Image (cartoon, rainbow, N blue to C red; front, side):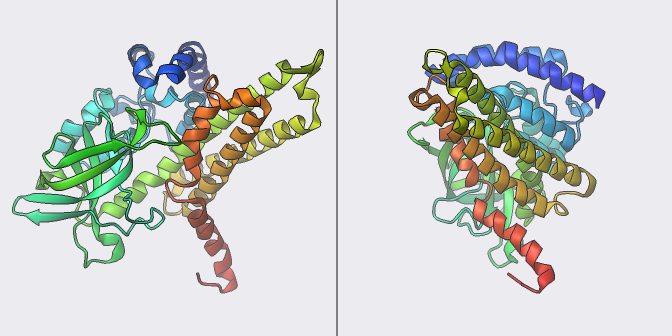
Length: 394
């Protein structure tokens, strides 16, 4: 663990000294305003040997286990720019992982290699506006074989980072008569393919965002791709998706813990400095002290739950850890929302402004309780597991 601790400290220092100073301009003018400086930081990360830390050494990464990477994800999550600067941001990190596991040599050369180098970014198109996201096997987008091609038709939304993406990983039904978890397949679709339409960026609580910090609506109109665009085997779509989502939930939840930790530190700093009257800091109020203590306890509990789940995935795989994965998904999302809410309350009116990161995170992270499966679905998974020994079948 000594080496990992050294890496973590190096990253903490880099985030504090080089990334956080970009945040004020980022909040004021958006990602494009800081992109040139952030690209310079990316080059520095490469020179430090910390680039794409989730990948194996032969691909230019650090070869960390999921449990080890979880620690890094927390540190990077303390800034909204952290993961991007180190090239392990969603959805690229998940797309890199499934391409590494399931891509052909040609697919890896065309899509994975430039993704790893940071030359392009990608998106993942699964959710559809016409169907409940809580039932991922229910979708209408189809991919029909036609000679040496597949023809894709459908409608997707909340496709993160589609703005400016070079390619999309698209889930589509290839065999509507197959078993429910064998109906769909994944396809690699370049965004300049005729029939691919980027409809719009979806405003999130009033903010469209841009680039990788945005969510888009897409349509596919007789979008024709070659058979070689199929990722894995036909019918493997949901199997690959689960391989992507299991580790992905570790990435997300540790990022949320990083956000929560930063929000707690902001809460403490503001409470200590803000005076209600001369010589009377906000921090002396018992309610504020309770919020600080509760936040600390919840963050630590969340951290330990996620690290335990990551260790189980490393040891036994995502399927064996499915209950733990569901557990951390709803628990950490709740902690994140509560800590952000308390931090905003402590900051008062200032917390509602865009002069701090709190309102930015509150807008963008309220979705934590919805995306990758809403809280209610994950709670049902945990309850079903616990009730089974008592003879209850749900």
